[in-house]
Length: 291
Ligand code: FPP
Ligand code: MG
Image 1 (tube, rainbow, N blue to C red):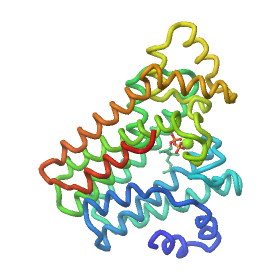
Image 2 (image 1 turned 180 degrees about the horizontal axis):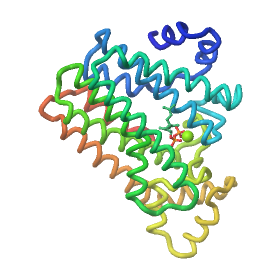
Image 3 (image 1 turned 30 degrees about the vertical axis):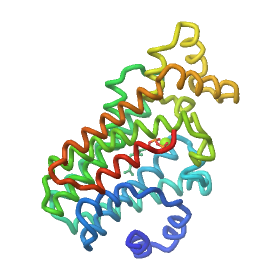
Image 4 (image 1 turned 120 degrees about the vertical axis):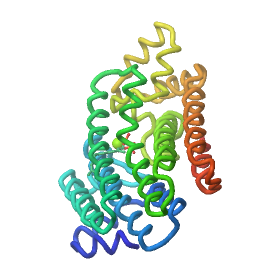
């Protein structure tokens, strides 16, 4: 694959380390192919964006002190923080070098997005200092942390394919927001095995995601106090089950899923004139993951 060749060109040790990373869903690469087809340019764009995305996850696992990623040990868990950061730096800078191959417009979409996503990660860390019940702050943060790169992917692919950059950007933005909301729901509803990492990790890491914000809105004082007392705590099985039960009973999960569905509809509305069944399926598959 193109990414492997890019890294091999740089350094054998970096390539060996890169091979230890478990492959993800390649959502961004799929998006490029569904918008711009499978030309050499599309494949190169996909590789650049996936390299930058992988770099951001390598750094994120160091920041979040995550020991697992996609069901296997993270690079920081296996080889330490220093190796994870340096491999991230290699992927990130090679991605930027290869961006030179594209029109300035595409280079600008992607580099602006990377700057924003770094700000988003900073916001995520800062919001994790204490419980956040402000939905506006949550959406500002997930827009930057997750959606911005998906938006820039869709815009760049549309630019390559000479399609409408604004409409596809709106599609990508809403897809990215819905994606993160569903990710935050799955952290609550799925088992450790299904997730490939410990469930309910967000609240333990200090992240008050949308399901938690909705849950706090509906709990009585006593239950709200109990939930507050579990913030950033290593949870027992009983405590985990209590949170999962309250999330379902209160309708917090349903509300969050319905919000993601609304965002999905917005995404599809933006590109409805193009009638692209594949892009419709990207939205439904992403939202209808198991809860
Ligand atoms: C995952 O969030 C993190 C991101 C989507 C963005 C991380 C961004 C950076 C570290 C800054 C940019 C750095 C480079 C090198 C481009 P999460 O922790 O909520 O999700 P997770 O459960 O998958 O870890
Ligand atoms: Mg993380």
